[in-house]
Picture 1 (cartoon, one colour):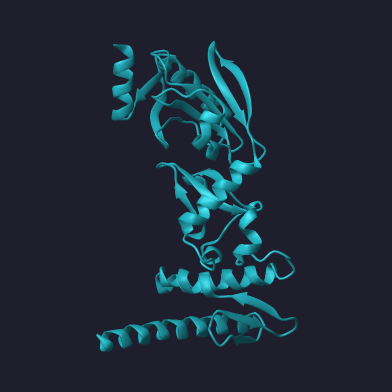
Picture 2 (picture 1 turned 120 degrees about the vertical axis):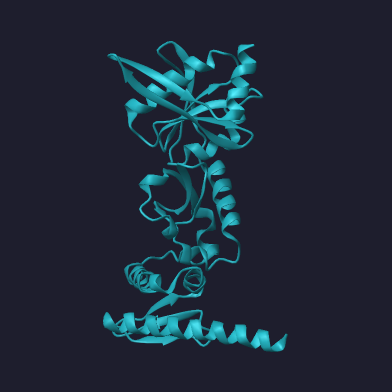
Length: 288
């Protein structure tokens, strides 16, 4: 048992030494001296002004990544530390940023590299990102905090609820009534968690489209008229060309894609819907 423990500690020390060597090499290539804290939790860049660079989160992040990713991670981390040297806010300090954490929902395809942000999937094509100010939090920043990523996201969600009350407006899409919810921050979809605060929600949930990060359009799933609502919402989402052109089903705390494609046949546009099995059963029950 003791031998295995020593082997693991040795491996960790070797990894830290290799990372420190890489940090020193990159710092030197940019004209900085490099002095490490005794505990390895930070380093100080010199060669002009002194800049403190926190390393706890970076060490955690490189531990999850292959070594061929390390040079890019180190270069980005040091470059960000130098660029942010004049900022009064230290994102690595949770006490400073806790009240400023927020969320932003993005299409997965619009995020350049999901490994360089912190967030969670709402479904296969939407992700809820952890942000501070107007930018995403980087994994090595969140790695400095004394709580897991999921708890940091929950903290941000709670901030969103306190900070932004959505406006509610009843509108029509080609005769179909829908409710438009609009916020001041790009986290409107986060408010689906508290949809009951804004309108009555039936047991079968509600349809939702996300024309942009500030807006959600919803329609209750309360009758067979929901089929027409899917069509109206899908056409509207396609025209706006915003966050997502798809229709979703909000039910039991989940945002599920209702696959609906606009198909041109013989000069006419038709809607072809392929609902998920659970929603298909709801439609069958409503139609009975």
